[in-house]
Each structure stands twice: as C-alpha cells, then as structure tokens.
Length: 117
Length: 111
Image (cartoon, rainbow over all chains, first blue to last red; front, side):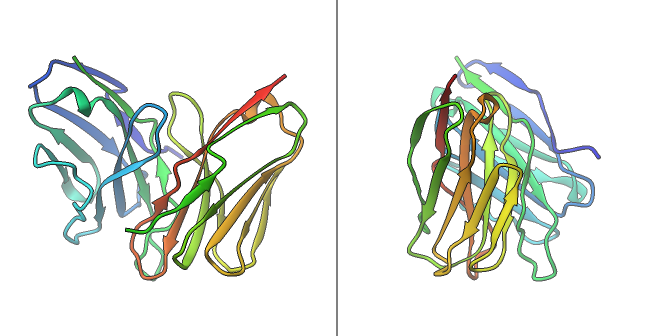
C-alpha cells in the first residue's frame, strides 16, 4: 500500500518568506508526527497529532512554526519568516495507535529538504 | 526529558564483519524500535520489540530488548555494502505517548 508522502521534496526559499510543507499519512493512521533533521544529526521532535485530541506542540522551536491537521488526515507544517537556521530536512511520520492509545511503530515519509538562502 | 544514549556514534568496518550497536537510558521503556536511514530518505523501520528479554531477527539483523527494560542492542551479521546508513534506536518510555530517538550510529563499510 501507499506509504507516507511529503511534498515538496525540496524547497528553496529566501530568508523572511513563509513556507508550507505537506504530509499525507498512511490511510487509517490516526497519529501524525513532524520531526526536523539537521545535516548529519538525529531527529528533533516538533509536533504530534493524535486523532481529535489537542496536538502536542512541545517540540516547536518558536512561534514561527505551526502545524495543522485537517480532517484527521493531511497535515501542513508552516514556517513563517524563515531564517537560515531553519534549513533542514523536515520528516513526517504516521502510526496506527494500539488499543492503549499510545502510538508505537512510526512510518516515515521521504522528507522535505528546506534550504533558506 | 528522557535521554537515549546510542553508541557508537560511527563505525567503520570491513565488508563481512559483524556489527553491534546499542542504546541505553536511565528510564524504563515499554517498546524499542530500530530504524535505518539512507541518504535522502526517511528512516525505515527494521525491528520492533515489545517485551523485556525479547530477541527478534530480521534476516541478518538481530535486536534485543534488554531485561532491565533500559537498553536494547542491534547486531548485523556478515555486513554487506547495502548496510551502509544511519541506524537509529527509538523507545517508548513507560507512561509516555511518543517515541524518544537516539542520535544515530553512522555505519560505513569498506569493500
């Protein structure tokens, strides 16, 4: 079946511009995550959506970052007034929670490489 | 927040050698996952572990959920060039709702 898809695959933007990154999770997955990965580094958690619950925004680095998830499916990560330090790969993952309500196995998309010039 | 210590950070080995990497924490985990990431791609799930002491294999890969529930290891036997990549451990801390990721082990293989 189809995996997690993300678009665009690459985005180059000028400092100060806003960008929107899109994630289409695996059908039926109710949990969705956004991560940021700087070059050669690990995964930095940004935000987590679980069903209709309020999102866990504890990883967002500043108020320039926001995310929405419409209809419990597609998610958009928005970065306003981009800065050069925002350059990174932005990864989306989704998972199907077990009966306990916790999300276990996460499946990742290919990422969006953002370059701020 | 919870910390996962993944080691080694990088490995340079010869083709055919066995590889071992591990993750440790001071917290108790309910789940351990191991991922592999290749350049330009997202991490791919390799092995999932759900019980303390569980030993699971996936081809040449073997992973174990430590009996103390605070650690896990991943072994790769008879490495081949396509094993090159970054390997991440991830764990679900008891009572938590989301995974914590290690910093990754970068594996390089000399032919």
